[in-house]
Image 1 (cartoon, rainbow, N blue to C red):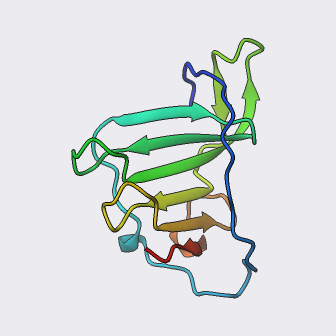
Image 2: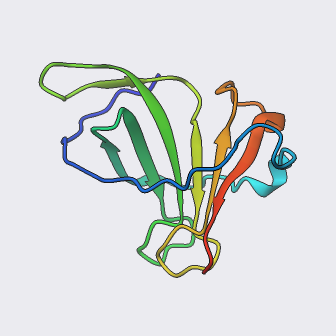
Length: 123
């Protein structure tokens, strides 16, 4: 579980509706970027997800993010507990400061075979 200090603010997440089950084969673990270094942004979102963003190439912009499901939050918003494994993975493959791919862990157990493409941008 992840515990951290956060500030609450509104963030609208636009999600493309797609059929998840059976549309695409699971991606291999070597396609999921490895996280190196400290996070550059952590935030509890009002939609019940907790985002952690990383700048892996050091250009000052996040290029990889994971989203966890929040299971408990303190009344003052100072502590947030999440499920142990991310549900969503975002990657900026084009290094333009916008996420170009989203993967989802269909089962939420952190198993590579359960990661499937959820959304791919046109950029």
